Amino acid sequence: MEALHAIGVDLGGTKILAGVVTRDGSVLRRHERATPQDSQEHVMAELEAAVTELLDDSVGAIGFGVPSPIDQARGVVVRCVNLPLENAPLRDHMHERFDLPVGLDNDANAAAIGEWRAGAARGVDDLVMLTLGTGVGGGVVSGGVAFRGRNGEGGELGHVTIVYDGRPCQGACHGRGHLEAYASGHAASEAAREAFGPSADAHRLIRLANEGDAHAKQILAELAGYLGSGIGSFVNVFAPELVLLGGGFGIAAFDYLAGPAEEIARREALEPMRSAFRLAKAELGTAAGLIGAAFVGFEALDAA
Ligand SMILES: [Zn+2]
Image 1: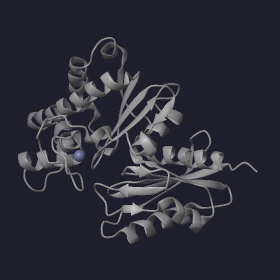
Image 2: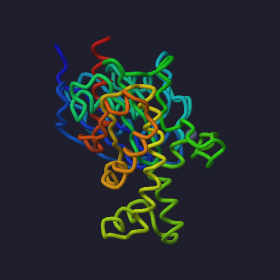
Image 3: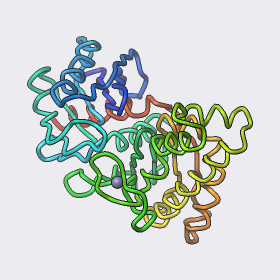
Image 4: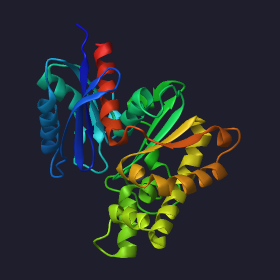
């Protein structure tokens, strides 16, 4: 019998978002719980609990989107930058626990797949998606195929260098001057604290901008400039038809980021790519990751 539904699980820096998803990308039921920050065992247990919460007889596969490079051959989460998860055999663990086909992907790849299958990028075969949340994730669909690099480990667009020897990157990343250090929600929170005091964060920054605060708008525009430099480079490399901004911060701040980011991206990109791409907001909101993860689950099911 063909399985009707897959459970998609999106592991974020602060929340685990899960849902039961149909083959056409509709989300039937959702579940949300906090992401533990203390240990790998705890993160694995909460991922398992999220699946258990949603599991019924209609579910034939499970997919996970995780903010880490994925070793697809072994089904292992290599190392999360912002969470205590390293060398974690997630695929085998969940397969043994639930006896269903399990697919794994990077969370931003999953978000791009979600938008491609069921969101703003339906019918678009060349897509670059950036998810701006705690970090900056990247997902690419190139020529109608999800781009993953060797053994599924690539596509880490948030960790391209945009400033040589620039700001240190976050968490477990040892690099400097990476896009993530300049254009993530975390970077926005840092800038907000510097400008508006220790209790300010990215949410407050956007709220102040919404209230017309010029300084807040200027901080967001500056952040958008860095984002645009990254986008210009991605446009030169991938020649996308569509560049999507998603993730919690990317969606909330879209109106402040899109204009300046697009201006800089078009300055940096070469013709004919610079005239050919559109910049748009992800349509599935923060559900893109879980929907895409479910499609990664369906992929595992169909390959089984
Ligand atoms: Zn980095």
